[in-house]
Length: 236
Image 1: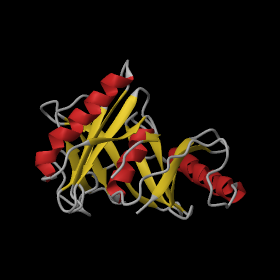
Image 2 (image 1 turned 45 degrees about the vertical axis):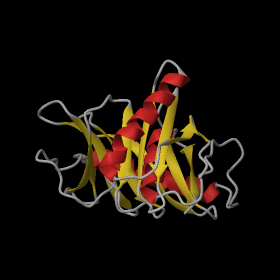
Image 3 (image 1 turned 180 degrees about the vertical axis):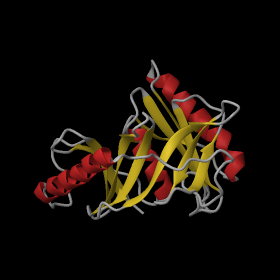
Image 4 (image 1 turned 90 degrees about the vertical axis):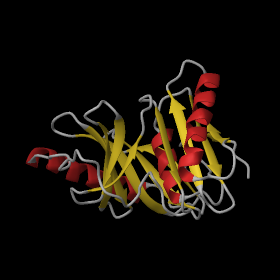
């Protein structure tokens, strides 16, 4: 599987991430949002702007941070949890196509009914979706990325869940790096780190985050840098 993502800004100044397949067809988009109580979350959409799910950062009763993932309903569909710094994230799979990042598992003991949106906020969201449709209609239909847009050309064969993790990583501040290990059976693990004072610090931390996940997902290979910043350097 191959594809690429790019950060865009709609006509109202709202930033979002547009995802494409290997042929340049738009497959969906995601955006950072803030609920009426100030809680931040990431909303995921397909290319028809139908909501496919959302995720939010949470803290357990013992102070452990994790990411809770939801489908279109209020029930949790998976959780990524680890005692780690806030500027680091990880993901992996022990069965090739499945993933601990967007897995189909039970939600943790502390649950959420999802962001509550008032009528006024709902109206603004609808207005934003209309704006996205207008923007897409006016965008070039060429399969090549538009000039002036920051794009990422991914390596062929990357797991879909890793590409979603990379989209989250791409929105983080520099200095940053992301590492990946994927073996011959399709089992993989990854980790990234961002917001460091030096690139070497970000690189070492990303590799360390990835290495810590190898036993968990039973990956039989070593971690390598996938990208420094958004410059993909990974080779099979």
